[in-house]
Image (cartoon, rainbow, N blue to C red; front, side, top):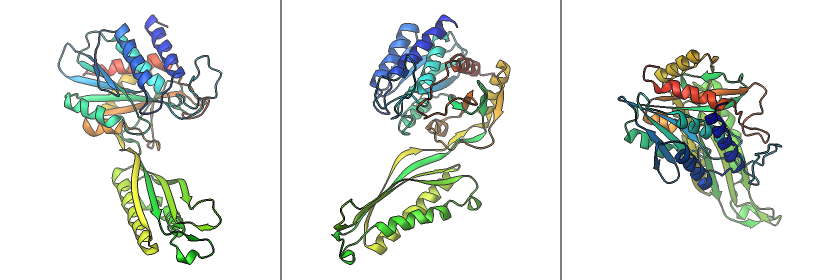
Length: 369
């Protein structure tokens, strides 16, 4: 292990021990900026909740690489010496590794053939961090953008790629109904949302039938909440929370429209008010063919095994905001086929991926790659 790799490893472990949730990454951002100030001469562009490091190139053109740095509300269950010091919060998606890998690249950047932007992004897990970063890159005239995600279930160090949709589009849908309260002995005098919520849930399988869609369309019930635990009262408030996802944006939009229409009809029929809102909105992460080809050439030139993925990942990724603005691609690096899955309490980012990710990014800097 080189001295730079040892520094990046120590950084990764420090980030792991001090995780912060989406939108709260104050220590994390400062730690990363301090590390780059101490170990590189790169220009740092502070954007408030996130930042960018810039390295001018000797030629024309530009390329960007992105890492995220937020953690998850998961209690860590590992004996690691650098385990989380924050109760109920931990790096169980590997964002500590993503940031450390990009910091390792930063330490090795010297007179690159084109200008390099390194994006250190907040709030990926909620889908709120990527849009501003993507807009910044477009305004800077950046030509391409790349990112990787570590993933269990694939061979160690394998480069996994896919043309077209890499990650499904998704959004959280919140349907809140309110009726009229009544005593439990006279429910006919009130207006209850119970049947409206039940009918919507019952309709979900019909709205997501595989034979009616080009790709995956999925509606997952995450919470049903009707009434109060008071046996003298009939329910008059209710909420249905769904996570909706699809391979294709247009099919997700159609599902959203169908559910809104049905919810409004149920509310009108039952004499209820309805409020609809959305959270954790992720666009589809759609890779660009030419950029995927560049990733494949880089991996093969480095001697890394390449796996072409047969279908998109169901889990969303807010790198899709970037790919709406400029060409690019996300690829996976395999954690190992038996490595604990991401978002599991015993997950930890595999440190051997740090130099491998750096090597992939270095290869992609050259415009001829």
